[in-house]
Each structure stands twice: as C-alpha cells, then as structure tokens.
Image 1 (cartoon, helix red, strand yellow):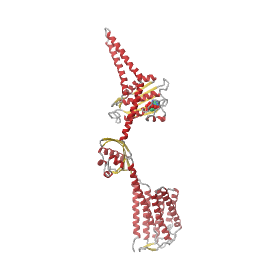
Image 2: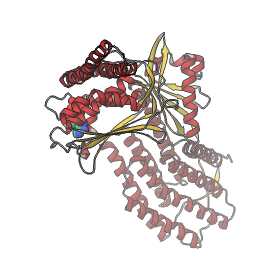
Image 3: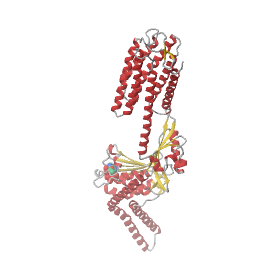
Image 4: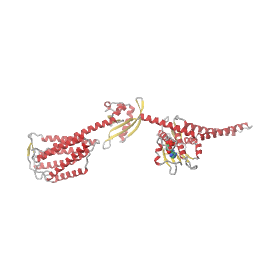
Length: 603
Ligand code: ADP
C-alpha cells in the first residue's frame, strides 16, 4: 500500500498556506487592493478544507468520518460565500443583492449542517466503505450515494455561483480586459469540471473518489497567476508612465537610499539608474543639493505631510531654481516606509517670469512718467511758490543791507525762510526724480510716514486741483526695510487710482484718508477713498495683469504693486467700503523682524 493521496493533500494545503500568507502580508504591509484580503481568506479556508479531507480519508470510525465531513462542509460553505465576493472585487461586477442572497443562503446551509445529526451531506448514518485507488492506496470512501435534501438544494446554489462567474467574465471581455476574462473563465471551467466529476462519482457513473480539493486548488492557482501577471503589468505600465512624465521623480527608503528613479530624474541630475540605486544622494549628487533634499525628506517623514520648497542651487557652475515636493509613503498605521521626491527645474520659467515682470514694470513706469507729466503743471506751480518766496526774501534781505543799521535778527529770519523754501522746492524735485528714475535703489530702513508724506507732497497740487480733502493718520517710527523707490511707486499708484476713482464725485465729497499703523507686529497702510468703489467679486480681479476699466488705463499698476509687495514679504489687498468708495491696504514686516527682506538690491 503506497501513501500518495494524503501526503499530496498535505503538500496542497502547504501551497494554500503560502498563498494565504503572501497575499495577507501584502495587504498588511502596503495599501494594496482589498481583493488580496479576500483571496488570502479564500486560500486559508481551502487550506483548512484540504487538511480536513486528508483527515477524513484516514478516518477509522463512522463517527469520526461524519464529524470530519461536517467540518468539510463548513469549509465548502465558507468557500462558496467568499468566492463570489472575490469575483465581485476582482472584476468590479457587484450585484450586491445577489451576493447578499448567496451569503445568506450558504450561511443557512452552514447552520443546518452543524444542527443536522449527520451533517448536510448524509440523510442517514453512512457505512464505512473502502476504496482502492489505482496505484494501490486504500482510503475510506467519501462518495455521497444518498444525498440529503439540503445537499440537493445546495447544488442549485453552486450553479448560481457559476452563472455569476460567467457573467463577470463576459463583462471583463466586453470591457477589453481579455486576459482577465480568460483566466476567470479557465478557473471557473476547471472548478466546474471537478464538480461535475464529483456528481458523476456520486451517481456511480465514474468509479473514483471526489476530487473537489484539486478543483479548488486549480482555481486558486489560476487566479493567483492572473493577479501576479496583472501586478507585473501594472508595474511595467507604471514605470512607462513615470518615465514619460516631464518631472524628475525618485523614491527613497528611510535611510535615504534610492529605490527607484524615473528617466526625468536621470536627465535632470545626470545620473544613471544602475549607478544610483541603493546609494544615497550624498554618494551621487552635489553635497549642497543632497543636504537640502535630505532636510526636506526628514521633515516629510517626521510630520507625515508634504513638504514643498523652492531651492536655488548651483549646478554645473550655474544657478538653478528647483521646485521640490517631498512626501512620505505611509503604512496603514500611519508610519512612513519610504519617501517620494518630485523635482522640477523651473529655472527657465522663473527667468521668463522675471523678464515679463521687468517688461511690465517698464510699461508701468512709462505710464507713470506720462501721468507725472500730466501733473507737472500743478507741480510747476508748487515749485514756483517757494522760488518766488526765496526771491522775495532775497530782495528784502538786499534792501535791509542798504540800511545804515543792519538788523541782524531780521537778516537771520530772512535766511531761515530762504532755507525752508529751498528745502520745500528740493523735496518736490527729489520726489519727482524718484518717481521718474528707472534704476533701483538698494534696500534700506525706510520711515513709512516720511515716505508717504513725500508722495503726498508731490501730489499736493493735484489734491488742490481736484478739491480732495486729505486726512492722514501716520504713526511715527514705523521703520520698514524696503526699496524706497518701489514703495513710493506703490503709494503713488494707489493714491492716483483713488483720485481717479473720485473724479466723478461732486466737489466736496472727495475724501482721501491715509493711515499708517502698527498692527500685529507689522506696518499696515490703508488708502481709503470716497470714489466709485469696487464690486465684491472684482476685489481680486483688479490685481490681475491688464485688467482696467479706464479708457486710457493699462491695468498693470495693481499687478506691479502686488509683485512689489511680495518681493518685500508683504501683502496687498482691496476692500469695498461699507458706505462708499474703496480701501486699499498693504502690510509689511517691520525692520529687524525675521520676515524683513534682507536683499541688497531690489527685484
Ligand atoms: P489702471 O489704473 O491702469 O486701470 P490698475 O492696475 O492700477 O490699472 O487698476 C486696475 C483697475 O482697478 C482700475 O481700472 C479700476 O477699475 C480698479 N481700481 C483701482 N483702484 C481703484 C479705486 N481706488 N477705486 C475703484 N476702482 C479702482
């Protein structure tokens, strides 16, 4: 007597145990589809089922056989519950009610099997008969010659599962997933052939033992092969997608060793896939680059969140701007197991932005020169006043000198007046020159109140000409680190916009209020007018380039103001006044604070 059947059943259960572990661990370690969990459970149940069958083949008493057959039926019921759900998860064909009905049906059979004295298979106590296998092995015969009613009904439910499997397989075929459809059809076909074989054995057509365990195993192997093939295909396709993306991507383990890089990464950093894998950035990239990327990666792993940055780094002797995104890949318990980096070389884009930005500033400057030209009539008047006063005082001084007794006190007062008037004319001319000059002034500590006063001084004549009431509330000692020319251009633009917005208002109702205060540790300036106002939905749009409502407008002023504010680490926005007009506000970090810009020259 050779023992082949039972040991081969043990080997088969070992195969199932391996598959169950393989898919179960994949679910636990990574975020793979839940289908793997169903498959792992199916494998585990088939494993137990095969072990029970191996035991039943060796039963010595009828009671032991009936008890083992009951457990065998428990296994079969569980397989028939899980298998349809697995097909649904695998194919995406999910007739929920049908699946629930099947689950309930097999659960009832399972319960009946446990309650009935001889289980679901036998109506009466079977007798132990033995069967000699062709290779000489003798086993207890497991055929069901007198099936119970429950056994017969259950056969119908097996046909329902088969029908569902065929339907799901056809659905895959129609959707172009031919390989998947084929594998499922093969798995079902093999499985069903074994079921047919069992029936034929039960009816005495074939004189052999049941072979359903081989059917289950063949089905599992088919599905496992298909899932592995799909996973390989997914990897290949993912690789192709990664290689065609116009960005550099890399995946590193927590020790910073490269696990995967795409072609974009190879091109951007001039490295080779084979040479870099398993090494760290410190072994393969310039040290400064590696150090900065490492800091971001550590932060991403520690916080569990994406880290986005822009780095300016020297690469091959030229500065490059890199936009980088680092994000951790997380296990289900939220801990990181790898970190992914996405890098763009935005040097060219930044250069274009800068060129465009410069171009707009030039246009804006031209516009400002034009508007400054337009107010030059009132400026001439402004300058004439102190000049005339100087002349009068000088003539008066000369006349005093002709007197016999020169009153020195009188002469001192005259000189003081001359100095004051000269300073006034000088301030106006300097202000005008600042507005017209193209070259940038360096960053310096700027007194905000004085800066605003100088602009208002320049626009003094305009205010009078337009009949505008100016109210100012300027806190002193508000020092910001700024490019004074740019800052004055912002104030000038906002003030001229306010004057233009009030042009249509009746005289006497044109009010301009300028405030400079210290708010939340920052310098905050507001310029408020009683003009036409701005609709709520336009408050953001007006800052977009080339948006204008004025016939002669260019629509770049506010955009340039925003970019100046951004380069000063500040912000600018507009608000609609509750009663009438609009308020423009900007805020800047105070000098000496961390956020104050340190640049030597303006942007
Ligand atoms: P421009 O003055 O050349 O139109 P700006 O960028 O300076 O360009 O302004 C854009 C638009 O914003 C203006 O055309 C106007 O519609 C609106 N705007 C700006 N300031 C005010 C204000 N104080 N009141 C009402 N609307 C304003």
